[in-house]
Image (cartoon, rainbow over the protein chains, first blue to last red):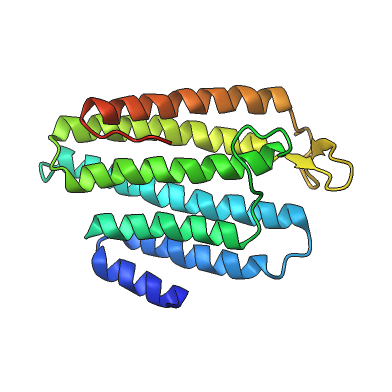
Length: 74
Length: 143
């Protein structure tokens, strides 16, 4: 299964997870970039940054759920 | 369904990290530079945050419980950001093994291992708090 197919599947399973989908697209792009990085520190930075994007997407999802509780939809 | 999506996302991140040549070892391995260790800490935190997110999505938790989990995760993520930002300043020379400043740091910024260590401790405390919050509502996460 290709990366694009995995993203499509995730978005189909979780249609509300727009931030997650965007993070995953960025993640794939970063991963592809890694293949062309000659400098180890650049590779490490890219790895740290892409994982941080996934953390931010998960946190945003949790925050959204808390806001829905505040709005009475929880 | 969303649970499956989030678990797939976490799995994908771990898979890509493995494929991109991330250092192999466990957190706390002294052979790792601070930034290498931070990468492993991040992966572990993705698993914990995925568990928190999944618990909220699937367990029909009361609103006040959701807000407690969100608050605990927010504090942990804040601590994670601070720790990773500091760890990124520390670069290990592959040949000599010496840890020093990452190239290109803004003027006045330096690698300070003691600060990295302090922020890692603070982050560990926050993740423990998040784990405790989850456990209090029946979601046990062992990392």
